[in-house]
Amino acid sequence: MRKVRTFWELILENFEDRILQILIAAAIVSLLVGVIQNGLSGLIEGVSILISIVIIVSVTSVNNWIKER
Image 1 (cartoon, rainbow, N blue to C red):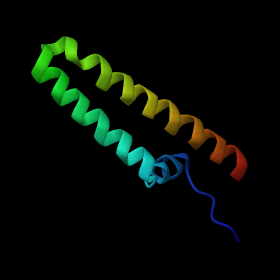
Image 2 (cartoon, helix red, strand yellow):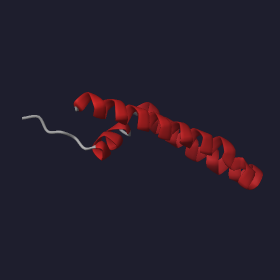
Image 3 (cartoon, one colour):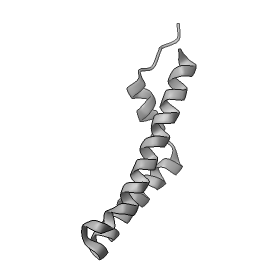
C-alpha cells in the first residue's frame, strides 16, 4: 500500500531542490547587503525573491498534492 504524504511533507520536499536552495541563499545575501547599504528600504529585492520562493513552493506543492490524491 502506498503511503500518502501530507501537504507539509510535500512542502519540505521542495527545499531539496538545488535551484531553490540557491534562490534562498541569494535572498539572504540580498537582504543583508540591501539593509547594510540602504537601511530598511534595501529590503525590497530580498523580500521580492522570498515572495517568489513562496509562490514556487506553494504551486509545486499543490500540484504534487493533487497528483497524489
